Image (cartoon, rainbow, N blue to C red; front, side):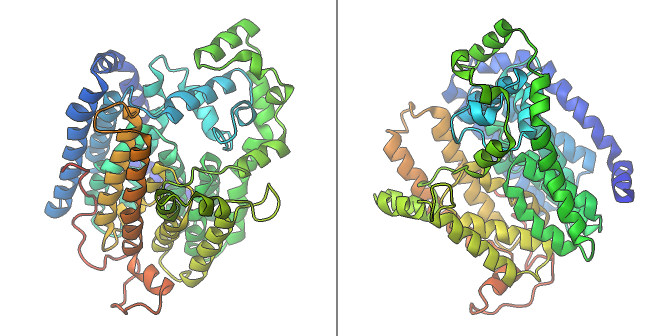
Length: 497
């Protein structure tokens, strides 16, 4: 606990930003209402795009000129930019956050299990963020703004973590992360869960580097309780620890199991509102209360909920190799790869191959620096996955900002372009003149994903790539955690710059 106390003593003033964040979100609803009166086109072209371009340009300049603001200054910049993006993007938020996460919040507040109440694939997570969303829905502001309080707060915390994880030039790198257009899009426009999961995972990786095994494992467990993919941080945590690895693994399981086991009692304690009040709340989020009378929705079952969580399948056919096959109209090949290997409940062929590839990369690259190992495993996953969601591109960003590889800036530029186009298409609802229709829009995403996947390969940490492909052209040895060459463009400008 001494490392945690030292962290609080050194950066305790940053904790003041948490209540300040709530005040900012609550104090500006009138401005949010004012901005919402502008058309979607005006807000996207005249407000959001210039803001992203300016942030990206400043991030590049920060690297080139060595700007090194204090931590407090970096946090204030991060807060102001993210709040601006949140307010401008009201009404442009994708439906999974603006509609489905609102439904999750109301279901929890009325004592219903969102894992069962919503259609398959809508909500397949351990209930940590469901509780956070339920609390956020109590804030008396528009849901498009309230839903982003936790992601924005977590993303601001990640600015601190970037400085702590940086091998050098920490003040510059945390400023670059604060201005990164990819994080602004995923956090401010989409309001996705990724920043919360990353905050826990990066905190765990940092504490592991300080040999705090129980605390590190506990934070990784909270990350997994937020979304499942922070398990990719676990090898880096174990690699950092020289002892107490079993203790860390034990603490990883603590938070997910606790949240699952206590979910029935938590939901039961929230179900005492009158039936009329519950029906009104449910109708307000476009759900039919008559379809939510199944006793299974009222009484969570641990075995059923675990099966629901592990049976999740992400969208396929619009990223990497599956997107290329989709663009070539080879849907039958995609279906064959995504078919369950044996029984209907088993993993698909593509998932088994993906897990085998990540496992092989872990074995080959185990001796890498823990941060490089974590970045590399995420890159292998993103290169080979058939399923994909655009927010996944944020996974490596805090670590890349802290320890930029040789071509990290190229990856960030490619990711910014892909995110921008994806959110443009989604927020425009395919009604704007530049989008001719869903097939054309889908093909655009398929094609754009290919160069991003290629960039992922070349942006791998040098030592990780050499170990993964020992037959490739030999390069000079790389000191763990150091840049192979200066990386002034650790954060690149968004599309349009």
